[in-house]
Amino acid sequence: MLLENDILNILSKYNNQRENILFILKEIQNNDEDKEIKEEYCKIISREMNITLAKIYEMITFYSMFSTSKQGKYVIEFCGSGPCYVSKSKDIVDYLQEKLEIKIGETTTDNMFTLKSSSCMGSCDISPVIKIGDQVYGNLTRKKVDEIIEGLLI
Image (cartoon, rainbow, N blue to C red; front, side, top):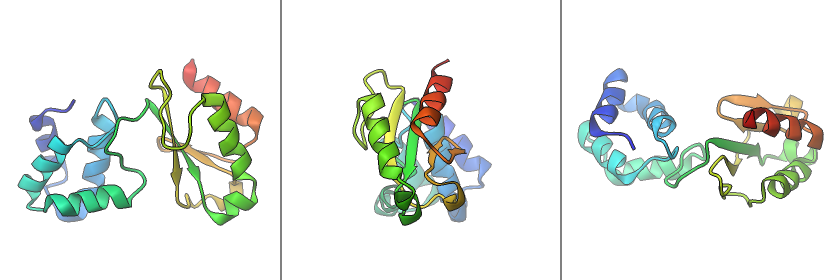
């Protein structure tokens, strides 16, 4: 759990400027041990940046990269857009759900992986794709998925 001082340091890094709110929220989430944006964090942001809580939650719930619930160490986002679907992304998603024994939006019991749907990742040329952290993996097959997951567990 981040302390108030941690949040204030992140806000200061971005000069408490509203145009940086998405960067601020992303950094807070990345630094939280549960990879979530907790209510306490939102209250501090609201107070310090003079943004209503409703506006902060509006941003958090609009963008799929944010979460208000605990996530695994690795958040696997799969592209749900048309080009990836045509490239058989559903087969990859079905395989991930089977392999990890979770459904979309769930986290594995060991808290290692969370599976989430995302909008277009801008990688249509290498679809189907998944994103883990800032890394995009493309031209996926079951074998490539196995290699990626196994690589993260080492």
